[in-house]
Length: 311
Ligand SMILES: CC(C)(COP(=O)(O)OP(=O)(O)OC[C@H]1O[C@@H](n2cnc3c(N)ncnc32)[C@H](O)[C@@H]1OP(=O)(O)O)[C@@H](O)C(=O)NCCC(=O)NCCSC(=O)C[C@H](O)C(=O)O
Ligand SMILES: [Mg+2]
Image (cartoon, rainbow, N blue to C red; front, top):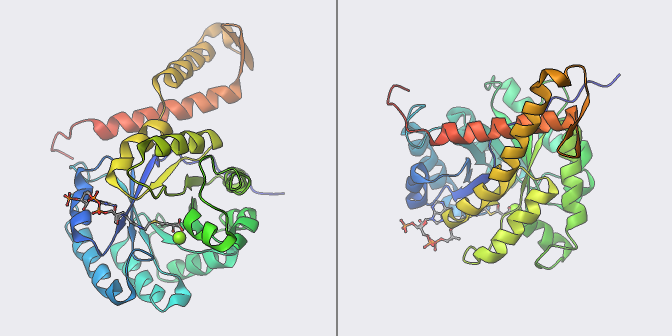
């Protein structure tokens, strides 16, 4: 018998901003930004001769982190390391063990073993159980193996939590051109969404490189949301608001969710699995979706509630 798939995470991952760990100015700006998560990048945005300096920047940054409840706290923190075969990955992983971010992001994953080897190393080093693993899905083999990689997240001791699609690498490897609507990429993107849905993980959509083109980003966020992604990886602060808007619950969806919750809370619905809501069939599965949405909205409003200073 297969183990039941755990319920999907309700963490906020609408806007996942990548910040090159070498860029001290950008690191300083994080506290004032309204993104849900930050990826501290040690990989492709840091030149080989700057990797050591970038690691030192992260040591200083994490040492100066505000305690929970203060401005700048509360964002999920993820460190993207270099691959273990690169010559930099081992030192990066040491840094992860020292800094204990929320997650380590593994680049250029090809197959389940690329995840399990890191899970095992974290376990051997007694890393806290809540130090999770995120995986970049950006190679042709990772698309082919998406389901198997996600399934590896169900093995006991696995820390796999989230996939992030990397279309720059995937386009480089496949020759697919960047086009509005991403027509030729949609089958692969949906394969990623299907894989995470089957195994209770989240998937974050790829970066959009042209950070001045808000109209195109708007369309791509709408597309990613419709596909089922939890959020978007971003490269520039100017992209945060659009991602938050598209991947967060809008007013109409929230009103509908509250109506569904109220309909099932009505004593008249006791013992019913399906109700008529203004001429539309609503089932208990919609109640689950509605509760997730309302929970997400609550997390967002809690994030924006001013701190009392008492933590
Ligand atoms: C793309 C950039 C190099 C542009 O930087 P810049 O020229 O400095 O832009 P601006 O002048 O418009 O910046 C305005 C201010 O905003 C700050 N800034 C810029 N980017 C960030 C950021 N990511 N986080 C925090 N703050 C940021 C600037 O410092 C300016 O501040 P101020 O001086 O006060 O005005 C740059 O945006 C950048 O480096 N972005 C991130 C690049 C990155 O992380 N790349 C790796 C991730 S992409 C990826 O993973 C691809 C994937 O693997 C795949 O295969 O697809
Ligand atoms: Mg990449």
